[in-house]
Length: 311
Length: 153
Image (tube, rainbow over all chains, first blue to last red):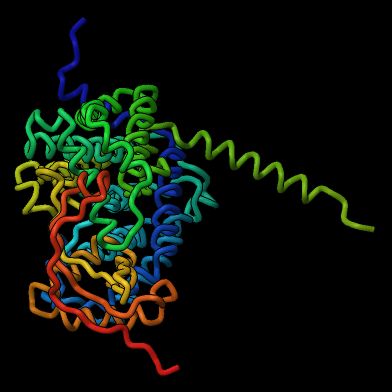
């Protein structure tokens, strides 16, 4: 018996069939997160319309324009992001509207980072939405699929899930590589991290924001930061192991989530996408809890309909 | 069979393009060439020797020596780093006085600042552990100072 060629084995794994519901669950989770994220911060996003043009520092796609877009255009794009986000989550006209949503979301999030400060809390969200927009993510649990029913499991629903998982893992690897490129192995000794925590909290104090309550007492224990630094590098550089399977994926996701909890505790920096678990959803059979939730909701609604009304 | 081939072709192209794009920053300068959403993820990676923080910021002061750091929403928006960039850029282009007046006007309507009467855009050079753990403040230099405009009683 001969072993399969590595490239064929890789392709077979990458294109292994997956249930249409898994990709649909990711569309619902990521779409609902994007919708909630933009809608709840709409005043903040709209506020960029009033930022002075002299502070314009474009990055990524906003480099396509020399100056900030006129305020009404910005407002229209922000509102369109909310509307398209709702349609994306519900799976309405996915092939036509999902790429449009991916584009306006990418523009809006990039626009926020185009004033001298590049934010790192929304990268995965933008990338995951792009992948979902280019995949048949509305073949189940969607407005589009309400009449024809869910599509059977197939390779078309497998590769986007693996790609989203790979994007999550790769972004952590990049963060780990950046630490080694800038600090070398000395980064693992903890002083870099301790200084970073001190700088971040002091900057908050000077700029009138709330620092972390834990930071000051912990800064007095330099040894602790060595352990935290090693753990950070292991989680970030070890991210690809999460692709092995759902159990390892779950274990790594819990560790990575713990890392973000630590960032909140030490620096009061919130990464909502991983903290809510959405960043790790592609690593898990995420359709199962959603299906269970749907069945429970269906039974409850059914009971309510059957209950006799008041005399 | 044709569908499967088309799926593999499309899936392969999208996968290679996306993974290539996400990995592309590996070949770029992690600090100077960061972007969005294709990031080098330089946060927490840069050396902060001595936890030194040398930045421009805005404080409100009172006649009895009281002082309060002005929160980001009164400087730019709720984003701390956005406030930092707003102050830095104003100082760099010689517009600290204008920013001071803008912030003072906003502070005038905020109840947290009723006991204070002036706003200052300052440059401070502090050490993180000294400041936070030992309460030792570093040096400060005032770029601009302006009164908080209050209406007649």
